[in-house]
Length: 371
Ligand SMILES: Nc1ncnc2c1ncn2[C@@H]1O[C@H](COP(=O)(O)OP(=O)(O)OP(=O)(O)O)[C@@H](O)[C@H]1O
Image (cartoon, rainbow, N blue to C red; front, top):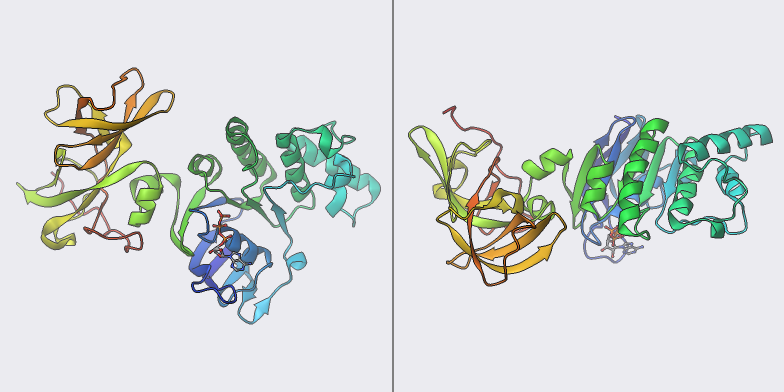
């Protein structure tokens, strides 16, 4: 483990709730961790605590096995050797790219500085830009200079706080992929904060979902999507809704009864005993609901959003239950129209009925008997 947080808790003076509440995570060497969550959930505070810009009230933070933060330990930021990139590029406007990138290389001789600057500029795809000033660069180029500047002194760990949020969507997505390539080429261990799921999936080896100061899950993208640990994670990652459901055992098989009929042969289905009377709420994601004219289940289109290759339809069943469905965009139906739909669920994700965002993790699956 390269970076470790154990039970890290931090409360700003006078605040009613802690900004970080018992956060535990581990990041391996060379890995990229991403923190996502709604505004105010504590992502920036977590980065600031790791950087040494905030003191923690409980728990500990370790870097390469050394405790750098605990209630009675506070290693100053400059000693931690951590690089940071923020959303405002914070380049020095009166310095050239060379001057900006060399800023943290004071200890090196002039020749060595020039060599290292050229090396990191090549890494971020800006070789030959040494003599330019920040105002002569695009936003994306400025942010790559900021990244080069942070990488130049070979930090032990790089922290990035929404570095692309001032850029337009297309550029953001491209830079997210580039960033991953650059960090992997440099072998840099990094912790990246974003509120954009696609960016998180594009950049991260491991992704943490935060809510109200708590880390709900620290896992890879596949697990977050298919095995969300809490209801909050299930709702936050991807589009979907919860619908009432009941798990029953029939002929030694597990069947999940839902408003879209019975789900059979589903992977990782909890046992009926996991819920009172087997009753719970099943997650039906937009990808799990398929448009099928032959299906006996009909739903009314109440909203639609064009997403290029597909529409995200919001649908209402006759009993009022709302669902969402991704439908290929050549199926252009009107609002108010009724269309046939069926469920195509691979993994059953179920929580207790009426459980709120703070609900505990779902029962551990799978226990389904082999049919
Ligand atoms: N210096 C501060 N003093 C007091 N409270 C603060 C301070 N900084 C942040 N907070 C509070 O701590 C909580 C976490 O804030 P933080 O900035 O870490 O959230 P965030 O997830 O990074 O949000 P965003 O995505 O909007 O940047 C919020 O309730 C915020 O209002």
